[in-house]
Image: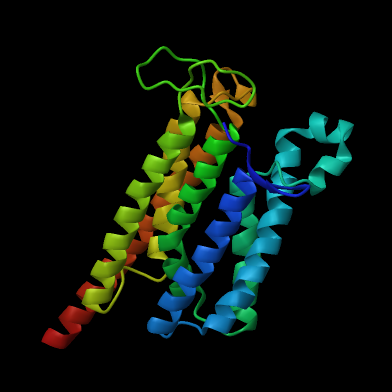
Length: 263
């Protein structure tokens, strides 16, 4: 494991922090260029949006992390301000809330921009999980499978490399979202505003439910079910029910429009 990639004097450059910084940098560039190309927002507006998303993501990532591990934070309250812990789901919730607030304030097309951003979230998440793998966090349970690796900073036991599992899963998510986005772009219309964003949320929840099966986590909701799984499953159900409802609604609109033209 390489939690510290290199040092500049007394300054340590941590692998996870560096990868998160790269994810944010590349995310701003990718989304900014795509937004300008599609005339959804200017690059400066994307920079402003990124600031709101980062602040909201950091705060809510910590809040959800405190709810998960209240006892640890109660013993060490200053850990709230460290950069070593935080819930990804909390970061998404906080980022979405403040991101929507900014788009409304700036009078941008919220859901069109959300669809554009969603395509690139898996790529940023991949960089973050590379940081987790190098840093030895978010590792899996001990295993004797051929691909098991010593991927925990705390020991050298062979474990499920859940960081790699999630990297592969996010590659799949990116491919799906990218293809759906390109198909919508060629057709000149989408299924409904926000479809790609909600598709990402639903698919990622399913991915986390599977990955958590192999992840070494003591945060159990009840029995064998982990808190993350208990959190992600109802979200996935609600999201896919909503997607089906909206798709049926859009289909009825198209049928009505077609019948009106024929008359």
